[in-house]
Image 1 (cartoon, rainbow, N blue to C red):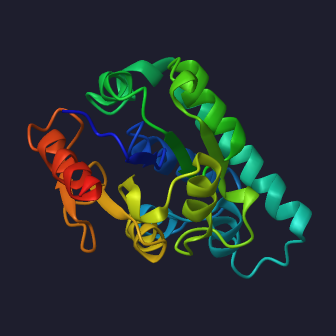
Image 2: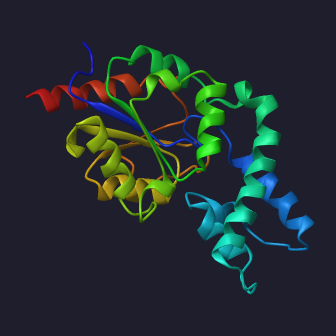
Length: 222
C-alpha cells in the first residue's frame, strides 16, 4: 500500500543533511576572525534564520541591515566551502532512497537555510528532482517557529495542511509544523529529545517509519 493522499515536507539542515556540526564549526571560525567568542553556539543557532543568529552573536554591535546580511553571507560561504567536499558523506542515512521510493507523492522543502545552501544540497546530491515546492526562510515574513513557511509549501503543493507530514530536527521547526496543523516526524540527528513530534527516528532507515506513515495515510483515506 502506498501513501496516497499525503504530502511530505522536509526541513533541510539535520533532516536531509547532517550539517549542524559543520555550521557550528563555521560559526566558531568566522566569529574567531571577528574577535568574538560566543558560548553555546549550537544551542543558540538551531532552527533560526541567519539574520536572527547574526544579531544574537553580534549583540552590542550597531549593525545595519546590510551588515547583518553581509556577516551572514560570509559565514554561509565559509560553511559551503567546508561542506562541499563531504556533502555525500553527510546526507542523512536513507534519505535519498526514501525520496526515490516516494517520488510520486507531493514533496516539498521548507527551510530557514540560505538559498545558496539549498542549492548546494539539492543539486550537489542530485535530489532537486524530488521537490515540487521549495521555500526558504527569506520567502516568508515570519520564519520558524511561526507556521508561515509550512503553510506556504502546503499551498504550493495544493495539499491541505492536515494531510502533510513534516520531517524536522529542531524544536522551532516542530513548533512551526504543529502550528500549521501538520503531523511531525522528528529526526534525532541533532537533539535526543524532540517534544512535540508525533514520531521520532534516528534516520530514514528506521523500520518503524514506513508503518507509521502508512497508518496516517490509511486514516486520511477513511
